[in-house]
Length: 260
Image (cartoon, rainbow, N blue to C red; front, side, top):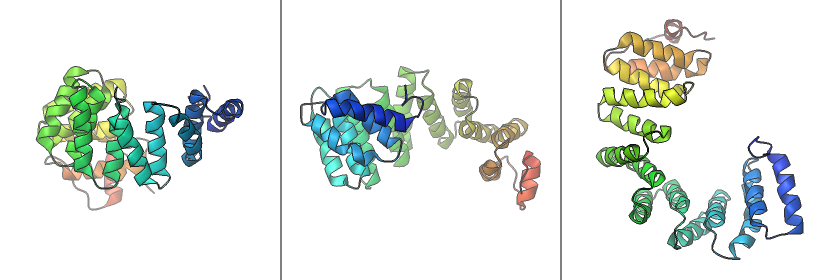
């Protein structure tokens, strides 16, 4: 409950008190790690997680340990740990995603793609792995592959907003603004206050020639958030049916933003 309430210091105290009486309490070690991570002190949890990991195969503990090792500047140790976890059977699939993410950080995106693909070979219907692979293809400029795998993920889990949102972004790059707009509307039906998604919807509307609707969407993006003026102005300027302002104050006035 303390973790869910983001009361990380309290969660740390509770978990630490349990570990004092039982240094190998798995759940307490995991709770302590998450509490410390919430305070940007994740490295302090490495020792307790290592004790748990030595007791036997535990994909969740090992994956978190690998992530914390990487975060503590021990990338080689962390990646080695994650590779061992990925090789275990039965597989713990979040470890594939964590390893892929760490490989991307050190510039090994192709290897990251291979890791996620190997996970999908074991679980072809795993939506989380499909989403991760779609994002990696997107980042790698392989848009056709990204569209294919994300469409498959959407078909498997049509109600997942993270999948639909990522698919919408790829559809924009493919120039399918109608389908992209539909995707972003689905996401906004669940998260109406997500301004990034609304900005993407505005892009689609402007590209479809629905200027009034697109500009109204951008006003929603900047309402009460003047720091987003630049994002909104860029969307207008980049659109083939948008507007360009030479003066920041003119753009602010048009969008109804109070700008100092």
